[in-house]
Amino acid sequence: MTPRDARRAPRTRHDSALELFNERGQLLPADVQTLVDISETGASFTSTRELAKGARIRGRVRRLGLPVLDFTGRVVRRREHPTKANSILYAVEFDRNV
Image (cartoon, rainbow, N blue to C red; front, side, top):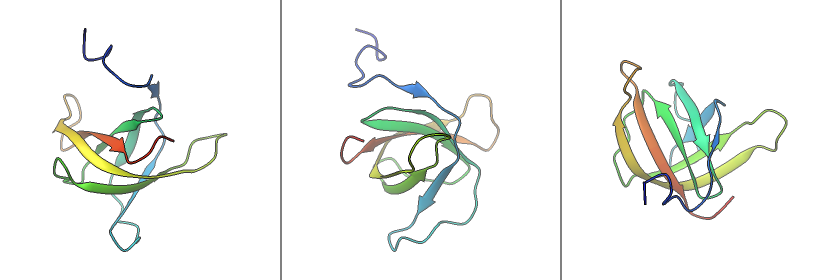
């Protein structure tokens, strides 16, 4: 089984803006953050912000024509973006399905 086949839910490619918040619910200073794909169990995104694997995350995604999605979760994977300098590709697993 390939890693793509092992996913628990199908992912939809997306390039919406992503907002990240601190523990107090305050919007983090503007960084370059872009949603890459999303499913009911998690999402991946690129960011110039440093986040550790295992870090708790709170975010909001504004998707054109769809309701705003607020989520909490944890970073399950991070790696340097293969084509964008100074950008990191993250995967987050949601605390609950959306």
